[in-house]
Image 1 (cartoon, rainbow, N blue to C red):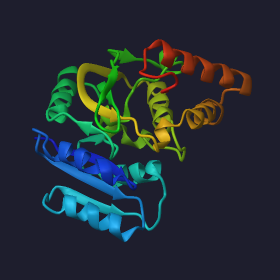
Image 2: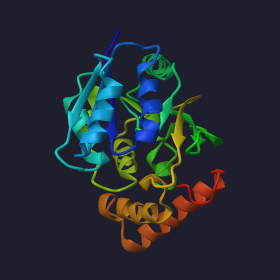
Image 3: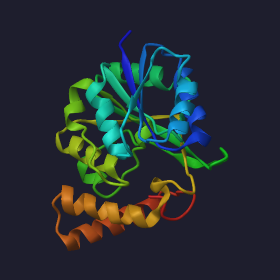
Image 4: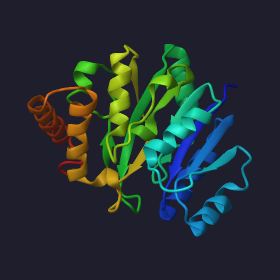
Length: 253
């Protein structure tokens, strides 16, 4: 049974962390390396994390000396990971019990190196808001206009982790990685099954529409090296496509 490394950045999400870590610990696929990157210097938060992780020997807690952001924490987790496969989950999201086993089987059957899935959108209290359906395959020419790949649904093969350095953006850092992989001709394959839940929280950076617009522009202008006018056009198209795909509320990009 191949080892799967799971990377969880943590920064002050006590209210939701138990759901996230329990959904990982309860996976039917048992050969896991669970890397929790504690991105804080608050001793009370650290004790909370230890309390919820101490009873599972598969969990490693890595402690940043200060808050360095989720991209830094994911990059650190990738660097120290030992698994043949790597998966990501944010500490306010959660998985279904068969998430890892289903993706492993799918990836081996299809002989692919990158897989994402459909996912539920839920409120802070777990109320269903909608479903984001995964496309079968996503290519660069589509991805540049619309990104529906949920980070907490992704699993990738260790052979491509060298291309998976997350930039220091407040949001959209994963979008940079997906674009990079697609330009490398790595097939981004979608699995239709709903295996994860993405939680919209009031204070989450990933919920800030204005921040997303700023970072989307940075993705195109700074990382895709597109001019300012073209970058502005792509930001507008990204926003319009998000609306068209029936997100629960306008501009959940």
